[in-house]
Amino acid sequence: MSKPLTSSNDALWGRRLAAVPQGVATAAPIFAARAENAEIWDVEGRRYIDFASGIAVLNVGHRHPRIIAAVEEQLGRFTHTAFQVVGYEPYVRLAERLNALAPVVGPAKTIFFTTGAEATENAVKIARYASGRSAVIAFVNGFHGRTLLASAMTGKVLPYKKGFGPLPGDIYHIPFPSEAHGITVEHSLAALANVLSSDVEAANVAAIILEPVQGEGGFHVAPFEFLRALRSLCDEHGIALIADEVQTGIGRTGKLFAVEHAGVRPDLITVAKSLGGGFPLSAVVGNAALIDRVPPGGLGGTYAGSPIACAAGLAVLDVIEQDRLCDRAERMGRRITERLSAVAARRELPIGLPRGLGAMIAFDIRAGLDDLRPDGAAAKRVCVRALELGLILLTCGQHGEAIRLLAPLTASDAVLDEGLDILAQALADTLGTA
Image (cartoon, rainbow, N blue to C red; front, top):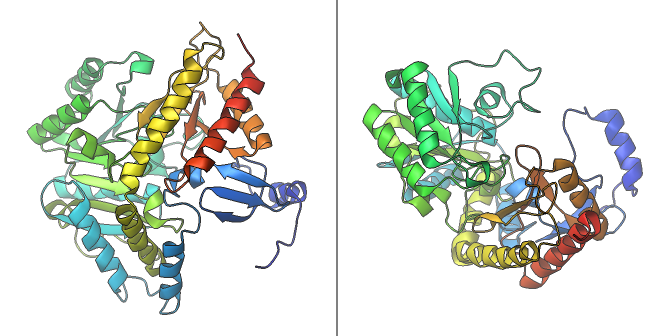
């Protein structure tokens, strides 16, 4: 393995500041030299436990041997033709696999893209074309990407919208039901009814899009009864229900798709992140009759469904199934929740109880033991201290107050426990005792 040209994090950080725009943030001021499963080593040789997984991309861990083998085999055949020019079997086979697995309404078809934002935007394009309608309903604190339409659907101004206007119109946001924010299912459904009576008629709504578990918004789980109510409303008015499973999908929540927990079948599902096992790949899986309303040429992309990424995606699905990683996600989630709940129960640190589904867990940092206000600055300090101790963490939430845990589902119990020990130490060092 060739050594990096620069072996100092500080030196590389200086080069990064000079060469790369500040608009793309880097959470940890370190630079990777190599990685295996749930561990990363930086250019200075220091080891870190990875509880970020490249923002939920590495459910099967860094450099899983079966993923690498599949990619190497495809590299020996060809790397690119553009599926719109010359097709290839890995694209078709991966589509067949997802069509059989995805809990969508009716027979399914799948189209591939490269990024999560591409998937959410194309899902809306499909819904608009098929229905002849334009309006989209999304949710406060939802996140659907950073391109213009995706930013418009995202329910948070900073840092995703400010200064980038005008954004695409005919997008409406309603409150997301969340116990932590005091918003009930009834509140959200009443707000939705109000939008449909005062802002846009249901007959002009193409789609309702939501994350079954809000990602950047703080890992708040959509109540199952709410998802079922949305399904009924969409059926009543001919609206496409889009489940954005970019972060929740491919086993993270203990099911291949998070909507399976609620027994709900969306019309369209967007997936990305862990689908490619570290290679750029996203998809829209959905009702075949709906997707096929779009004529040839209306969808696609030069690199969309890269043969390398499709080969990786097929291997990812094999690993998820053969290694029973959905079951593993449930066990990991229980282990993490038990540890964090015990810390919170001692009331020595201003943290909230953990929440989430499967191994998609977060908890809030608060202003004080009896002060429930969110403290994003303290959450960031916890992450900085954790990095010093050898653990990579990320924050999320409306105010950056939530610390999210996204360890690879392939992480061993020993590595998982070591990471949780470091987290406990970082919390104690940063927040002190009551």
